[in-house]
Structures are given as structure tokens and as C-alpha cells.
Image (cartoon, rainbow, N blue to C red; front, side, top):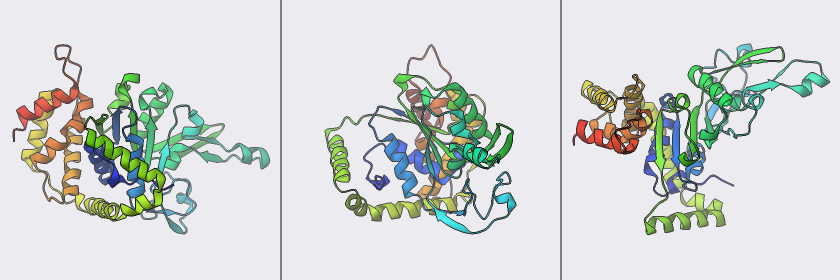
Length: 336
């Protein structure tokens, strides 16, 4: 069954914008989506991956290396590159019950037993290279897998030491997590690794709820026909993403915008400078999507909640939530 069209998703504008921004600039650090069940989180992520243009990869490479810039750590491409082919952008699910061997890779037992050879069987991180690693219920992920993801997300390389095997391979991916905050909090170390954090909720307007149900029903009754009806808008959005990627390097960020970003982070008391860096990169990616040559204050206002809400310290004297605190700071520091 084809993926639900991204352009057919009703409402949830902040989530859709964050995913598009991450698709334009993967260095932003991924997207965390927290909210109610049944609000289209996993649907949007799979829809985005299906929307993106196919990528060229070295044929036979288990890590889908680009033929134009193969990773130095790739044990396959270091032996010489051969044919290439076009593949869909990888989208890999990391289930909560996954073992460490399944995630990082392990010894290929079949080859070891039948041929007596020590060979590496790539794991989920290998499959996710150059694509998306999606973790549903990310706040329930086991601690040892969280530690592993932190290391790989920081370096872009997966190092495997298993049964006499010693191997490094590329593992650069956009980390996308979703979950329900009522079921548990995310570890601060992993939370800080997400570039953007979005909040989604169940629609409260009758017209919106009806439209969601109507579109989902139409899709399930005739998936091919429903996708064909949205093919034109999907193609237009795909072209917009490709154009934004090409434009990204030439989008300028004026000093006035950098100063505004710094003032906003100071007002919110964010730790370190990762907040400013993410805010700048996110605003630049949004400007590229908008076809702008320069980042403006309006771009900062749009992306600030997603870029900063998960970076705030707890304030026992302020009972308002992080989203409300960011909104208040935007009003004070970035007046219209």
C-alpha cells in the first residue's frame, strides 16, 4: 500500500513544517514529536520519506553510500566502487524491544557456521544511513540503547566490537522520535540531541475532525486513487524541497537576526549555544523553503517554539509550560 500523501495531512502545521525543515537540512539534528495517540505522527514521518526524491547509492553497499562522496569509514566502498542505482530514502523503525545486536549489527552466524567465516551482518543503524531512523514511544527506549544512539548521533559512525569483529561504518541519519509525554519523560541527554521538538494534539474543531476522518476513509478504501488525486501537490512540494536544498547554502543570516536569536536564548536561559545554532539553522532552512535570500525576524518567530521549547530549564516559580514561556519571550524579545 502506498504511503499516505504528506500534502493530504490535515492540520498539525508545526509538525509538518519541522519535518520539511529537517528534510532540507539534516544537520539540524532531527525532530521529536510529542502528543496524543492517533494524531498522525507516524503517518507524517512515513509520508515525508515517500515524498522525497530517490537518492543514488553504490550498488551492493549495505550502507547506501553516495557514489559522489562515499564515507571513509565504509568497509564496502573502501574496496572500490562499482555500479550505482537509485533507491528510496531509507526509513527504518527502531522497535522498543530491539536487541543491541539488531541495532548495531553482529556476527553473521549463518556464514560463521556454514563457511567458518567471520562476517558482519549490518543492523538497523546501517540500514538508516542517509535516511531516517524512526523511534515510536522514544521516551520508553531502554537506557543502553539511548547511550548507543547518543554516541552514533554525535559521530555519524557506528563502531562494532563483536565476537572478534572490529568494524566501523557510516551511520548518518535524521533521528525522528514520537511519543506520549504522559507515559514518561525523555532522558535529558537524548532530548538535547533533537534539533526540533513539536507538540501535537487532537483537533478540537468539528470541521477539522470530520476532514481527517473523511480523508483517512477515502485513503483506506482506494489508496492508489487517493494518492493519484494528490500526486500534483506532492510533486510540487517535492520540487520545493529540492529547490530549498539547492538554495540553502546561499541564504544569508544578517547580524540583526543573530543578535535577536541570542537575545531570545538569553531571555529563556537556555544552556550552552546549541539553542542559537539550531535556531539559526532552522530559520535558514525555513527561509530556503520560502524562497527567500535572507533570513528575517519572521522566520525566527515561526521556528523558535520548535527549536527552543525542549531546551528550557525547569523553573519552580513559573508554572507555565515551556511552549507558553517561549511564546512569552518571543513577544518580549521579537516584537512585530
